[in-house]
Length: 251
Image (tube, rainbow, N blue to C red; front, top):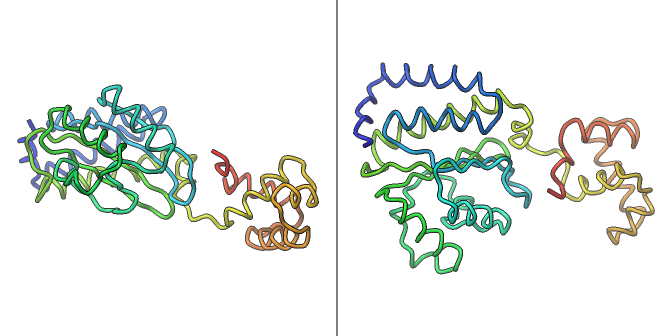
């Protein structure tokens, strides 16, 4: 059980975080990094149930979601919640760690949330920590089963500390993930226009595709070029691709 959270004296906590950081730096991919974090948490009596990374300012599903010990029904629900951008326990509107098992179900009457909460209860944990880590425009969302230990006090403080360290290590290890956490310079409209230009469309074709005038499209292209310091439309496309400004426009 999570009584080993009594390890939370400063010396042992620092020791554990150092080893976690070293292990994460050797991970081959994000799934491997999540498995490493899962192993470290398991040694403390906890269970990493899932971890997702996503951008906040678009409708894309999570990047490489990790469902560690989630049973199939919850994994499916998590994917559906991503696609519908309306997860049970609406973490995207809370941005603060909380105990999922302490939620009042009556406050979440929609079908998806009810099913999600019902499935969570079947996992056998009296307390399940939901910990969002928000950096820039990115969100790393951790779900951690705590068995009988309340998500409060030192347990809460140390778990948040651990997942924050893990997030920083993962972002440092995998730059392609870190791009989600950088504020976008282009608006979604500008990004979509550049994406269409990258596909070989002319300004006129982009205007027809989006229902804008050619003047509006040209104005938006000029604005996007100024934001990214591009000297031409070809340079704009190259810079937008290089900075992942348009990589996730359509998911």
